[in-house]
Image (cartoon, rainbow, N blue to C red; front, side, top):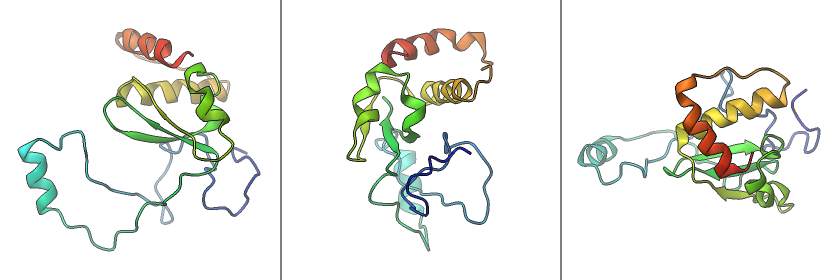
Length: 148
């Protein structure tokens, strides 16, 4: 069981350790927002101005209680289960935040942080993590930045 038992029935509780991996089903919710990464690009503005989303449900105002919102250096935000981030010393304050509003900004790009999450998830489950050796410099830099 990956859920923590707390807040049964509470929609503000993340019930899996890494909510970005899994299957999309009829009850899956996807929230779409404008990218701020390429906001200055003429092509991005043209796409955003011509894009009309209908029947869109707004993202929850508050993050899940047992998640930390981690913003990467390129502006992407990941809701991450607190349990996964315990090994990261630089995120200790956000992980231990009892108010439920844990947030952190990390000096790691989105792609590398996603790989870090895959490693942390594998370690949490006692499984080996296989990665491309060419990504070792980025992963080592991320480990240094995150203190894990």
